[in-house]
Length: 270
Picture 1 (cartoon, helix red, strand yellow):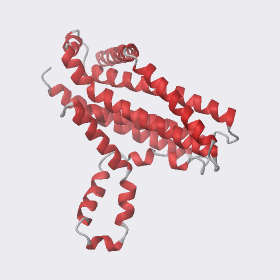
Picture 2 (cartoon, one colour):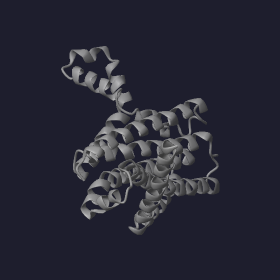
Picture 3 (spheres, rainbow, N blue to C red):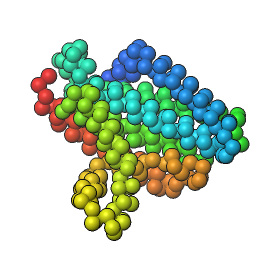
Picture 4 (cartoon, rainbow, N blue to C red):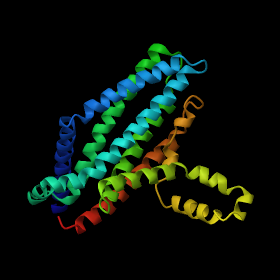
């Protein structure tokens, strides 16, 4: 019974901290600035697609999903890697922990608060894209558009905890740069494997480095699996079983990075 009570207390505190972080970010006008950026960028995408002589619908969605992807990850790098540093500077973390809130609730609530806000902003941008698509282009929205969008949100959640984990060891700027490098590397792992298929490669001194990078990528989140943007306009959808497995994989990596971050956070002298 006490275990169930503790879990309910954890969920309650996590919910309250998520809500608090969400409204704190709204008060900082990050949401409004991001919304204006999305609107202006998507309108530019619309104009660029209209002047094209090829498939305007595909071009619009290529640019639109790219903007949503880059904006989501850029903001989550910045916000999640700065959470701990910001809270320690304001001494609000000490105050929160002293009230009986566990570090597990604090970590989950604050990171989820960032993710929920960014997800709602991305959802608003995605709905706006659908509106423009139906209003101005003949192309129809297919399942792969929805699958690509939700996998962007799933990847953003994994990256949110990854960025926070790096911030436990490095200053915010270094944590952001490290997160960016890891993300670029993992999105390029398929290209590295294609290079390794060339039999002439092993005569080069760089072959061992590429083999090491290829092996390292297998121990990290397979972010390249979540990227369906190149399939937009070519495929109507991927198998729903595959989509479900990708969501499950993102959940596993989220809980793993959350657990690792919590272990390190408990060791910190706050």
